[in-house]
Image 1 (cartoon, rainbow, N blue to C red):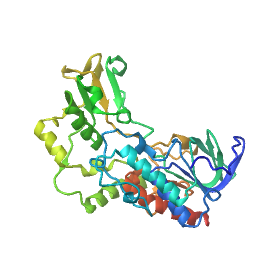
Image 2 (spheres, rainbow, N blue to C red):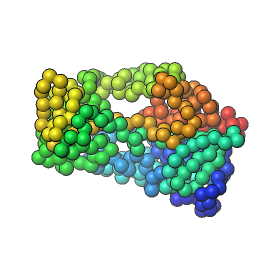
Image 3 (cartoon, one colour):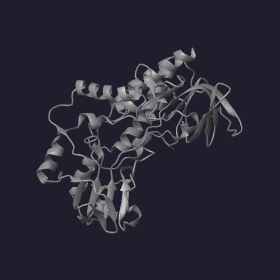
Length: 368
């Protein structure tokens, strides 16, 4: 739904609600579902603010070659399965079409009060409540759940010589399809699942070189629930101590899938160490070696979109945010703030569970 018809936009007036959910991706929709289930009235008791023009969260911006056959980690939202909204037998269906369709049906089916497009510029405090400053409707809330994810804040390290490069540089979030690189030498940077998957795609149509800071552990065998729980526990331990969260992949490694085995056989996964400088026509290392390239493709991850929370001074001198609560979604400094999609909940299945925990804990804390 677009902006609630009952909300007459007045930029000088803050509409009072109990809870604001910021973000309508997997985590935000999960939280909204559980808030409604807890009896919080949609529109009056809580609202969900989304800066997209349509449902689907970050999924609507994924590359076209990401299909149901090769997507990593689609998890059902609570109360409605993915297969209830999308024909999952069509494995060629693009994720950037299927997931938005699912999210749209989910919002409508449960009558979730999503207001869009509304961008939260900053959150401040006044008289014991939170002021949610946006580019549209303004809100005044007793507590809020932040579920802004990471897609809007790519992490692209600016190596020395960045501005000298005469070719093209892009980040994962700007990728569309491999064919745009035909006839070009592409340096693919990064050691995560996106880097490996896109390296595989691009290497089928043009020359590639893989560069990463450290070697990647390709793990044989199934990725068991026990491995997942242990990885999440390690990330959770860090955020409970107020340290910046690490990625789950850095703990678990990557599963040795048939696609990765095929890349190994083709010799595509011959990792080069991270270069030291970018030069006009490529990159160079301290030992004097250089490599010409037309494209530097940064698959170096994303950082959490938390800039709008800067006025609340949540980040400590360790560079992290100390978290508490059953699933480490609650900010220790102010229990009225929950962050989901942060730390141990930065995965589709983790976001689901965290959305439920955050909603229940916040409702209980506020005595709603």
